[in-house]
Length: 449
Image (cartoon, rainbow, N blue to C red; front, side, top):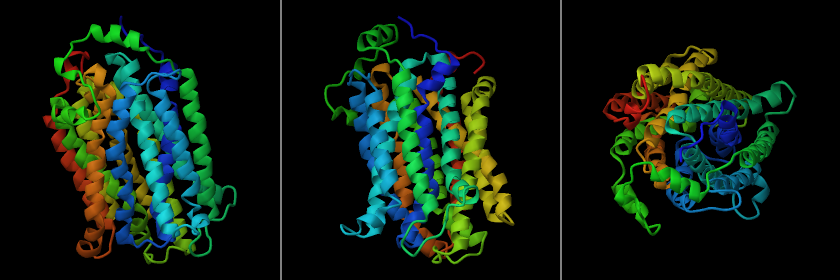
């Protein structure tokens, strides 16, 4: 039995839930640092509060991948997991900017950090089963298209999420200032809207996508080369799988490490870096209108790079087919690295839009190319668990950055977070060099690739 080729719109519906996931993820990335600063966090403490996010991902991802490989319900194999993840993430989105309502139980800063943990753990529960779903449902020669469509939807959702606070303030007159210790109304409403869109988009995928039954997957897998070492009996076999990961996955791990080390630094420090380096603002004056305007502009910039990523993703399959996925990814990372470095030299906030164009090119490739390369090297029966293990190389660099980023900003960078963005640029360039060492197994399958 062969996998059925899907039409473009079937592939679109297959990944539509990612629009909502990324809308929520974008709201978190662009605004979590600002929210935590409003609740009292110093700039050099931000990365420590962010550490709960990748740490929960490190624990949750392989477990979710393992059980999603072995689950079959009326909703299918992968769909129950990203539906549950969406519900939990929505709870975190609603309550993070309203953490001050729960100060009777603990300080708002700790409630906000806890909601950040819940959100990121829930996004992790949802994201990797989505990745595995694409690999499950699509034949090999449609996977690059499948992951590229995911990137397009990720870009659209992220643009909406990133721009929403600015739009609510400048188009609809919703205030972006509030009393000390209170999150402005434009941010609170944005997070509530993001939670609603997340639930709706996930339900669209759940009810429009058909997964292969266990019997059908068995027939499909019977036609593919089987690896005698792929049989496993318990959750503890995740450690064995980690040790025996495919060579391609091991090589990609270093590319992912430096890519996500750079991304984490950008997400955590973009708002204080731009507020201080470009606007010339005091990093402790987080309640001023000027600081909130700077934060809203960071949302616009994040929307720009996500919009560019959505556009670039349309062309990724054709570019990868002509030049190979490896060369495409290396080129994209180089552009992104140079763009991050350029932020140091930007004369004003408008010039940062050009930097975001380059970052968007890298972001699109990071979201698509490694997974397209990886999928061909993974045993089909372990698609979920290996996608979960692959997440180690996304969360570990973020944990390391979270641990050392704060002390580096305070002691090495003299409390000037712009240098954290410069370090992110160099990290992208290292990742680009390491792409050359990756073996793309599907090179022999995909013509002209």
